[in-house]
Image 1 (cartoon, rainbow, N blue to C red):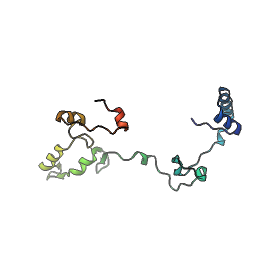
Image 2: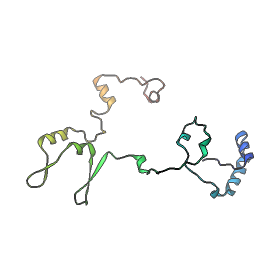
Image 3: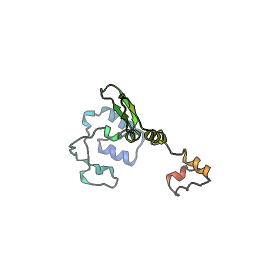
Image 4: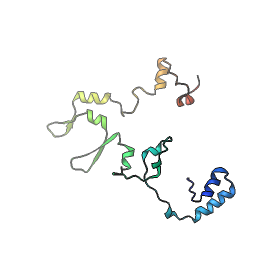
Length: 162
């Protein structure tokens, strides 16, 4: 939680020699503070850099278009298709749907050619699933040793000792 101090003497004391008595005074000071005095405004993206020391760090900037929160999360791997009448939704994996073309026979029902069915059966159930199982298990089965992670990397910290 951020510490907001309006009094300069309290700020200096907080930075130089914080004590329990000071915490109590700040708590009472905070309970008396008017929340309407606190405002916020967008600032420049350069503020994200620790090295930034510009004078304009507290100046408000004008944002032409506020992006939606949805844009932060990105799209889904699964496509949702609506039928022609717009009633039912059929979820499908986007990569599988795009590679399979469904034709219609004389009765008007959907059908696939034998080549398309064979291509579909060869595909993995999900595009993100590994092709041949767990990489460590397949490496052990084939007798290959996995390369050791670089020393000092975060993965080397969690790697099992050999």
